[in-house]
Amino acid sequence: MGKKIPMWQCLLVIVVMLLLLIWEIIVAGDEEGHIALILAGAFAAVIAVLNGWKWNYLEQGILAAINRSMQAMLILAVVGLMLGSWVAGGVVPSMMYFGIKIIAPSIFLFTACLLCSIVSLATGSSWSTAGSMGVALIGVGTALGFNPAMTAGAVVSGAYFGDKMSPLSDTTNLAPAVAGSNLFDHIKHMIYTTGPSLVVALIAYLVMGFSHAKDAAGADLAVVDDILGFITDNFQVGVIYLLPPVFVIAAVALKLPALPSLIGGVLLGLPFMAMQGIDPTTWMGILNYGSEVAAPDDPVLGELAGLLSSSGMQGMFWTISLIMCAMVFGGIVDCTGMMATLAGALLKLAKGTGGLVTITIFSCIFVNIICCDQYLAIILPGRMYKEAFEDRRLKGKNLSRCLEDSGTITSNFVPWNTCGATMSSFLGQPQWGAGGYAPYAILNWLNPLVSILWGFTGFTMEKMTEEEYQRILETREEEKQAALKMMEA
Image (cartoon, rainbow, N blue to C red; front, side):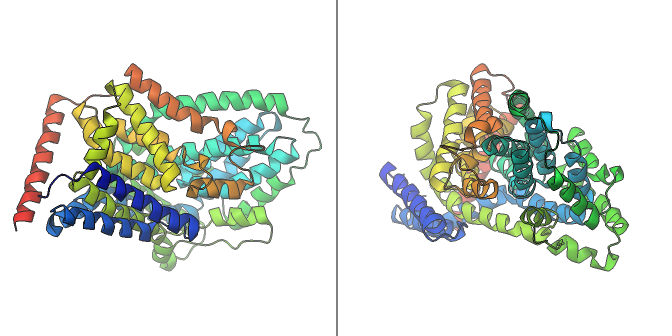
């Protein structure tokens, strides 16, 4: 192996990565990050080689990092299949239809948050939820006399609750893959932080709703009727179509393996595609490439048509490719000890479990601000602090929860972050200043605080058994020996 890379060179690698990401995402307006990550990985490799690290060892580090994320990538591909069958089969449209039916003016903000939670849970996408339901709810709220910033805050809270808690979400799959935990264990562990945050947010929305709601008599609710009509014009809806998501929820509760459970959800969606009158000879194409609903001229219904369309398995490969590009950079800085050097400097500030959780939370927020991307806000701190959590004998699901309680949930607060720019564009409201929605996105700023509180109190911070910790040490040693053998070869 090579020599220890000096701190200034580690910082230089990080600065170059940040500059490349800023150039590609902000200056060039690409909003992708793939090329910047590949170039940053190449620069990190040059620094490593100059310090005596051999390319064979760096390559094994890249492959090991990709391998650690392979489960998440497989699940993402299956999730694409599931969305293809659920959207085309009327499952997602039925969930949206029944959610919209519960809207009532006196509890509008409460309902808006709850509805977006349901839709986002069904689709696994905060962006699609805000871009369709969010746009519609802004119009309904305005007609009812609500401040658009309040409505936008309720939409964002609900959309990101579903984004965090849905097994269909890419970030929900990515966080446990990076932290070394199980998908369904990760989701259930987040209930302890995200659940209380949602309850507090819903209570606050009830209070704000009753304080600000106008007399709804004669209010223009035609937009709601238009949305319901658009759904029923394009799909058959019914309670029976809710069976596939009920199955997936039951699978989570019964601790069934993620991949078989999600494949079961795909298969359950197929009969409903037949009930929608879809020719079975087109099923394979729909699962692979998705389906499309014709978009009308109306802007709200046009966004809704986008949500009622799906991109199938192929639509997930953008995220999968981004993960692989990030792992090129992450694998090199990890296997050469650069990440450990940076983490060691930060960990000196962490005192006890509470300090470690706090450092992790704020690191994720910092990466969201600097790197402009929620995926990197999960991947980089996850790799930095994985061993620190293990050495404190904390189970991987504690780290994966921290990553989502900060990396996912705060991404939309940064105006130049991809998520922040998207939310502001969809909802027509800035994050901060006059008309800013951030103060009303209660779940999003409360969730990290709850996570930090549980870190200092120790509540739900589950520990490994001695056997589990020994297996972790054995795995580390095996990976080290495998890398050494490859380097010698």
